[in-house]
Length: 421
Image (cartoon, rainbow, N blue to C red; front, side, top):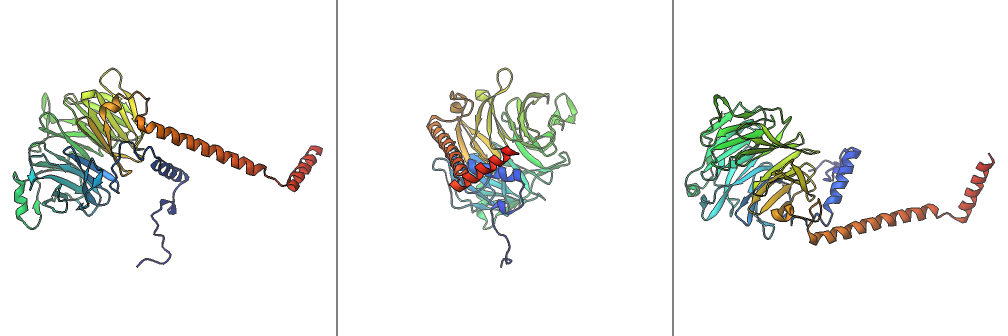
């Protein structure tokens, strides 16, 4: 039973907000109603904030949602399954195992949450929890999975990284009526001094796992043993990029053959030479960089930032520069992933959007990416807004001059009196 007179409104205006916060909220709501943004990137809308996602084949995506759920969705129809893997808190990370690991023909997904556990479940049957990975003492913030082995990596707000080994045959998990509890085979703690926000594997051999987080450092681990990787040429010291170039939280990391990319709250994305641990490229932004995605086959890096913008940087020739800006999301970009000729972006605005790489990179219509079919709609919307502003000004002017005959006479007498003074 609620308290009489209690404010139970979900409208944020009913809570204390500064003028700047109210202005920002109104601008965000205006952008969300923009008919162009509602279509740009053919958005998938699951009805909650998307905190993470992973691709499952060419037509399915697994979503980690703020609504305490992980769901699968069809990328073609842009519809989510009704069933969901349910957690006791927001689902901060999801991942999909290699296609060789299946149960009853279904791919296998993992979801991690503020509830400190990781659930293992079939993509075709999200409510069927096959196993739970337990051991973290605080929020699980990120997941990575080995591309060929049934090994899972989790990073947590408890400052630890845990290594987990699933059964070689996942069909064995279906033999029990209750989810199987799995403990980590390796726990790494003490090297990172802050929360673990992101991890990635080297894409060539998957022998190295990179980790980063709120301590602004990057560390490297043997992906099968959890032993710290030694510095090349100095076996007595661990491979590490210490806090310094990045001044604060690193939210994302992605590796290519020779470069490790990081995205930080210090308004930069940095490309590091993996062997020397020195900065190759620094991409400066005007706000927090929340996600980074290198696409080496076309020589670009995509970055996502706190205000929802996406930037495409040319990095393979001369001084790095932004060649394209995409204004689709209206809130923080939460995740970026690539699959073949397409990359995907998700945001806290509750949308997942799809982008054709060549269309974005080779766009000739200007700095801001806008497909031809939406440009006409944008122009029409701009003209409509300008007309509304002109009409409002005309109305205001008319109202200001709409004086009665008596009021005009009194005003003339007042002006006359002022002239005589």
